[in-house]
Length: 208
Ligand code: GTP
Ligand code: MG
Image 1 (cartoon, rainbow, N blue to C red):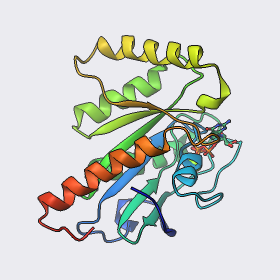
Image 2 (image 1 turned 90 degrees about the horizontal axis):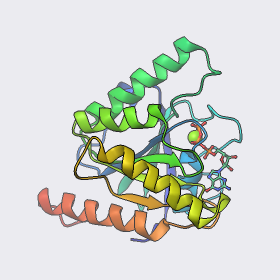
Image 3 (image 1 turned 60 degrees about the vertical axis):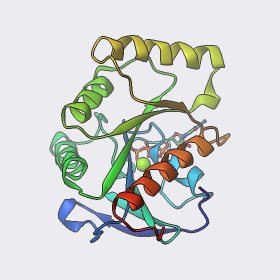
Image 4 (image 1 turned 90 degrees about the vertical axis):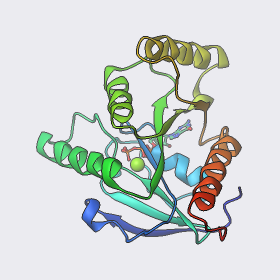
């Protein structure tokens, strides 16, 4: 899969404001504030500022839709866990984001981003448990892998695997990524391609 065209569509404050999508394949990026969701979307789309990024957490505040190859959607979501934003505002985003993740019918897969520099965090594990409990399919993308040695990246992954093995026998797929070096790009697009083609086959629509 190659991304040849990527266009910003719209920002929605909630599920109701999301674009009509009927059967359009959709993929969403979620994770803690500042983990690198918007940067990763830009990297995948070969674009510097398609999704707005910031060194300060709490940059993305809406459900942002991007139309890819005039055929399917990537969705950039507000991050969770940023303490400095007013609690009421945080709760509102979190409710809207979770509502989107639960109820958006054409959302085929969720990429949950985890900072490769940080040991397993309760907030991330709980988020995975919530996705799993609600049977939402997801993969883990470890981000910012350019920032530390491969030994340290692997130590983080092993710590996660150990933590998740306490809960599940089958672990979600996990990839190493970097928006700086473009690590993981091919693998992520491969996942997207497989899911998109399966979706079209199941829908009896080969026109993707
Ligand atoms: P919110 O929208 O606030 O939830 O953040 P986000 O998850 O979208 O993070 P964003 O993409 O805005 O990136 C946050 C900061 O991390 C920015 O300063 C980015 O330049 C930096 N960053 C993101 N990805 C990488 C990466 O792979 N490597 C390095 N070195 N820095 C990164
Ligand atoms: Mg963002």
